[in-house]
Length: 552
Ligand SMILES: *Cc1c(COP(=O)(O)O)cnc(C)c1O
Image 1 (cartoon, rainbow, N blue to C red):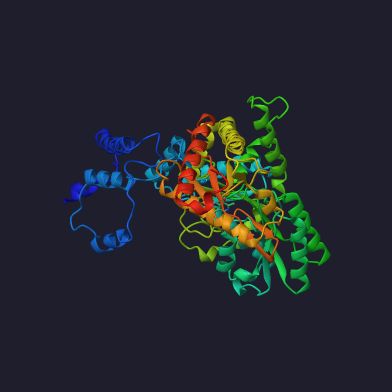
Image 2 (image 1 turned 90 degrees about the horizontal axis):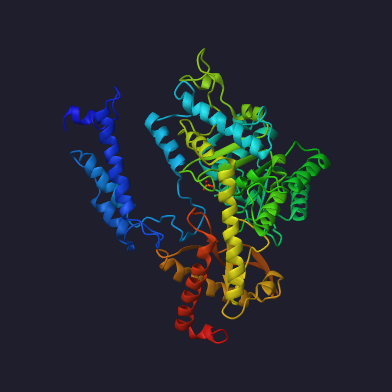
């Protein structure tokens, strides 16, 4: 490859129209290859390829850097191959909150790439700094934080946000921990329905995952704050120090929303009673926080003319999210309901000054920042260089606007209401296991005979019975999973835990998941999904005579 050819692997330095056309034609080729793989009746691109257990081994054996670069046409062909059999968010994509990246989100990411914008310092990327400040200000207003006081940054996922919250929680109580390390009696709290991010964070900070106290949940999958109070007391009375409580506002599986106001009251009561420093409360709103966009919706005049059921459901969500601003920090995963490409998570801190507790000293950052030029240097982030993902966020907020997001989020709720209603009418052997939680997701559980969710939920079923039902659901997970190219349902092996009649141990509840996250899924498609489930389950009865008696 000549040096000229190497230069041709880069965008121009002079704005040459020919180079631009070359780039556009490569992108056009890639888009058209992907478009050719699309089929609205399938939830994958192109032809599915089941990967046998040697698939990755073959790659490892064969892969090496080519001696000669192969050029851009070859690259487009390789990239198109990588798209082959990739899940794709057609109307039949219902598995989890992995969105179709929207055009503004993609354009934002592309801009980040074209500029190779690094969010660390405004001298390196003024655009990144400006976009980040815009994203922080806009979303602070959504949450109800004072944008003059709050601060934030984009980070590596909702998990990164939970981690950052913990880092701050420790620093707030132990400002010297940065230099001296942490005491060995710190404790964190989150509900049974919380994401495992906190478990990882307890491991990574050295608090130890045994010091993560799991709080019970209520029937709506939200944290039982009486249990929180009891467990915080126990910890303190045994000499432990509570530093951090994660209130999940929108659990990943079942959309349970913890009551942030009660959680905050419990932590304040504990600090006051035991004379402790304030305990940091992080609202893990990575998923559900987007519904705070309805916090200022006028439910009386209903300007977007939502039908009564949808309006009611949104109102219930609003009631549960209204005190989110009491949390010390929150997060928005724009790569979830914000419809952006990965990774676009925004961490917000109510009292932005607290970042100084985890900041580096000037002398620790000799390469940048703290100069006469530049005024935005994020030396308090755990990352050093940061992709300026705020550019995609700002692009999306601008393109959708508040109303665009509200309509989209409301539509997810609408589809779920329709799905729950119809499946209950049509399949007597199904129960909705999160029916107290309106939202974008429904968890539904199959029974070999008729639904017995009430018995299970109230702790009246035996462990053998709950386990038998779990086995039945697991068979359905496998069957639906094997056909995921047609309709891609999700599933979970712990939507919640229940008491059982014959043992003190609680048992996890398996459920299928219907997560509506594609803009193409509409209420009219619900009948098809239910007929599809019915057909699949019938085939399982036929294979599985021992389960078949009562229903068919
Ligand atoms: C998805 C999710 C996370 C993890 O977020 P990532 O962006 O995958 O790191 C954490 N908490 C909740 C509630 C989530 O839904």
